[in-house]
Image 1 (cartoon, rainbow, N blue to C red):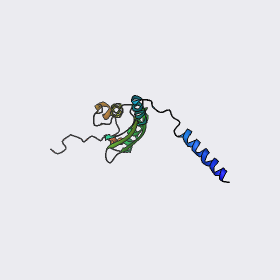
Image 2 (cartoon, rainbow, N blue to C red):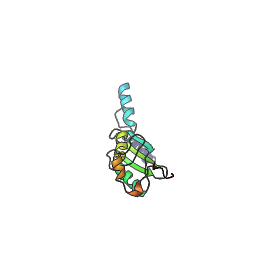
Image 3 (cartoon, protein in one colour):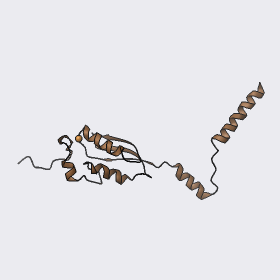
Image 4 (cartoon, rainbow, N blue to C red):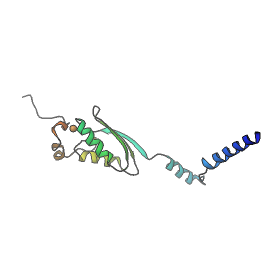
Length: 136
Ligand SMILES: [Cu+2]
């Protein structure tokens, strides 16, 4: 009976040894540094302001970002006018995500939407504060 326990322990040890530590260990400092870099996630979390006014805006912004390669997840908070994005920095640049949103008519911190695109948005989506003086 004792022998069986030893066998089980031995098998467990072998599985652990070969399974979890099977990867080749870096030989020198540079290899070690490279290993560290690859271990670090390239997923960047970001949040920034995006202008929006209604649920349609929310869908438009989220669908636009969702389609971008390298984006893992996106959530737009209409109330806070903030978008939260998880993306892979190796595949897509944050700048390009902001540009894509602006191209759909939504102002971001760094890139403003083209007036023509903004004007073409449905009435409910006019999020920009009107500068027309109503009080005369
Ligand atoms: Cu809208």
